[in-house]
Length: 473
Image (cartoon, rainbow, N blue to C red):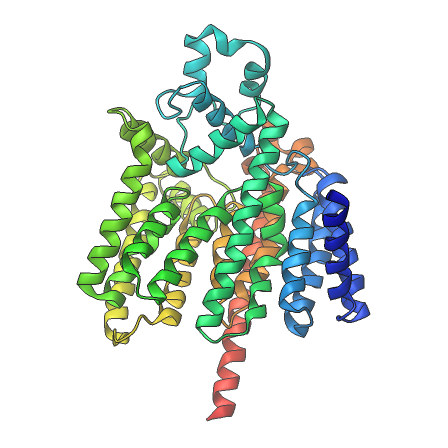
């Protein structure tokens, strides 16, 4: 039976390959070897090897986008194939999976992961200082912080831990399987949305073949792909005018990652008060129901404390925030605590501004999906520009929204964002004071290149768009 299934898969792949150009077949093989090299051949400290590999993979990716030579089924097949490369080993570019495993291990032992920090647990419970659990504890990157992962995400951690029977390696493999299955589901949802919007279905390759998506999700075990599945499913239900189901799907998205919360104000001017109330009610009830197994009087305080510390303490790959922080040092000699207050207020104010603008631009006869995507992308982009921390996988949210936009800016950023891995490079380890990348001027130079390149992409695309408009007129 296994041999028969394997033969069917082989002939399916081979059959589709015969219908595409030899150059594309060659590039598929090169990409496959490239992903294998990135994952098994280099460490995140080897910065130049990583950047060169990503540039090659990104170049092939943009060739496919521009030439549009891959049929839909081939996009799905090779997208899965690239991801399968990463399945059977632990991530080598991120250590967040240790905390995922820790939270899952607690749940399988009947312990609420929201109630105590890892340090508190190890200090107060002798059983956490022995064997594999203690080894896992030593590898955690934020031992003094309460977990910041919402309840549905926690359920996936527990599920992976349960089926792996306690093995850290197997737990990670099962997490990757979960992410891969949801990504396949997301591919199908994107296909349905494109079909309903009468857009080319091969636009799914914008997301499904993107190197950042492939490396950071299945490769580095980040759950943005799961969140995006529920977010896009919710938008699909909005397109179908199934508001209750949309609210449930969006509630599950928020319960995987909190980032969709920032987009909620945009629905009000586009759906109207009545439909928006249904959407928000269904979302809120869904989120509360997912939270019930964990809810205690301490949960909200612990969770909000960790989220607040995350935004106040962690700094990585920021842009405008770094500039404001430097100005604060020049004027008053230290980082002003106002930065942690003013930046969220500005993002909130910008969201309200977009709401007012949408009221003026939308006729609300049908849900203006394109208008929503434009404003949602802009809002997320402004948020990331102001954020204290922009990990590479955050940009994946913009990549997914780009499926429905005639823009390549965020796709280009999805390649240049890998420059932020300079923070973990051998250069920092060997030359930075206390191996702290914020004490190494070259780190800020590399980050400046990343964001200046992004600014160049934006200016170039705007000028190109203006030229096209002028020529039409």
